[in-house]
Image (cartoon, rainbow, N blue to C red; front, side, top):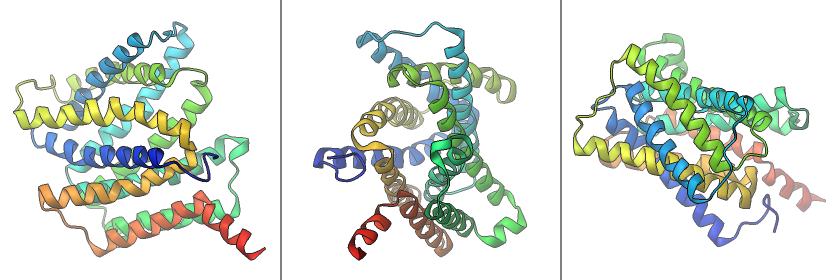
Length: 304
C-alpha cells in the first residue's frame, strides 16, 4: 500500500475522526465567542494546548531544541499558523456562520498549492493543478457571493478575514517545510504554540485587556474542547495520519470538515446556508479533486 492510493480501514477511521474533531471546533469557537473576545479566544486556545503538548514531549522524552535559529522558526510559525489565522477567523466567526466558515476554511488547500508552486521547485503548477486552483477560487467567490464582494459590507469583510487566515495557514505550511525539517512533530507543535502564546498574550492585553477567567461552564467546556481536543490532540492525530496516509490523502479531511460543521451549526445554533454557499462548496470540492489528481489518473489508465 502507498499513501497516495489505498487506505486501510483504520486510517479511514482516523481521517474521519480528524474531520469530526476539526468540524466540531467551529461550533466550539463560536460558542466561546458568545462570552469572550477573538484574541482572548486565541490565548485560551494556544496556551493550554502548548502545555499539553509539552507534557507529551516530556513523557516521550523527546529532545528539546535549544538553537536560537529553531526558536526563531517557531516564532514565525506561531505567528503564521496560530496567531494570525486563529485571530482573523475568530473575528470572522462573529459575523459568519460556522458552516460557511468551514467552507471558506477549505481554501487553505487551494492557497497551499499556489504558495508551494511559488516557493518550491518540486511543486510546480501543472495544467490540472492550475485548473484545480482556478475552480477552487471560483468556489470561494461563489460561497461569499459576487454581490457581497462588490458591496464590501461587514459580513463580506469577515469572510475576507477568514480567507486571510487560510492564506496565513498556507504560508505557514511552506515555512514549516523549509525551516522545521527533522524535528519531532510533537516538539515542533509545542514550540510553535508556545511562541504563539508569547505573541498573542501581549497583543490581547493591549487591544482587549486581560483574558477573562470568570467564565460560564458552557464557555469553559467550549474552550476545553477547542484547545485540548481540536488543537493539542488534533495535532498529534494529524501527524499520525500524515505519516500513514500522505499529504494527498489528508486533503480528504478538507472535504469532510464542512458537512460536520454545517450539521452542528444547524443543530445547535439554528444556522442555515444559502444556495450560493452550497454551490461554492461544490466548486471548491471539485477544485480539490482536481488538485488531488487521482480521478484524472484513473481515467487515463482506463482510456489507455
